[in-house]
Length: 216
Image (cartoon, rainbow, N blue to C red; front, side, top):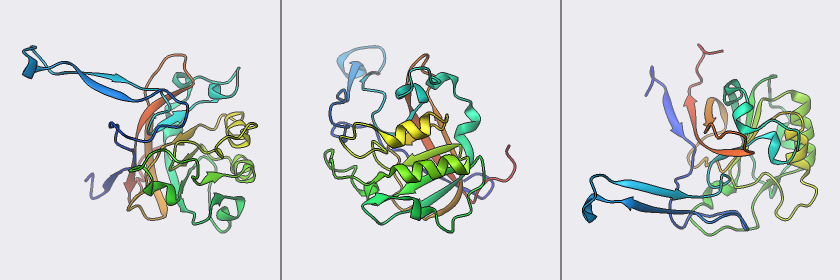
């Protein structure tokens, strides 16, 4: 609790057996040193691709001249944000109907995907349609998030969502989890690791409820 507010963790746990996007590097965690084995300290070795679990895609992920993850302003990741619940098989432009989204806010989509982190990776996840990405650009949002390992349909070759958002310098947070989170307005904090010169980085994402009102 902070000043009477809840801090809601919307990141996924990094653990053996977690779903990894098909074709990405595997995840592993092990003890490089262990007091039980006689070492002075416990020390963990972690191996993963940077698109494992909750992570942020920077423009450089798809745009050769795009900004890299360490060049993105931190203000993109500490914003007022809408969690919008979507019950369909895709997230289309229609889900924004009636939502009052102000320029500079973040938009986060909650779907049935949030219940799928306890099972192996599936290609049949809810993804964003190209039209909703175009509309989000028009609205001037600061960041877009989805509760699975890609905002794109599995196997998409033209990647319309990534290309539309990232070409307009709108970072994408993938691998969020909204179990138990109600639709509505929150304050989002989701800072990516300062991984120099790369296209993405892991992040710890949290929501503040009710939203903070004393930040810029």
